[in-house]
Image 1 (cartoon, rainbow, N blue to C red):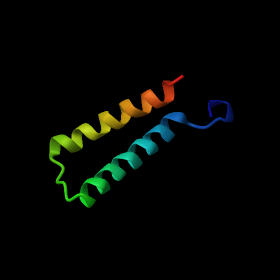
Image 2 (cartoon, rainbow, N blue to C red):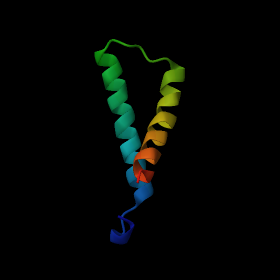
Image 3 (tube, one colour):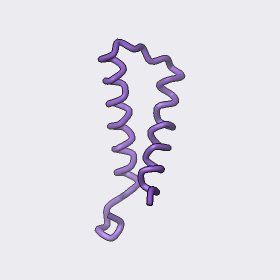
Image 4 (cartoon, one colour):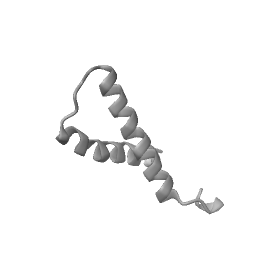
Length: 57
């Protein structure tokens, strides 16, 4: 993607935001109430998962 001139940082941020929205939606479907601490942790969890996915060989 870098070769195509795309901003990888922006794309990663968009994927992170979409993943967080998905997790919040899944929690709501299960009638699980996310605490403020849960919500604060979601970003870190998603970022770690993306790093593992991107760096997987």
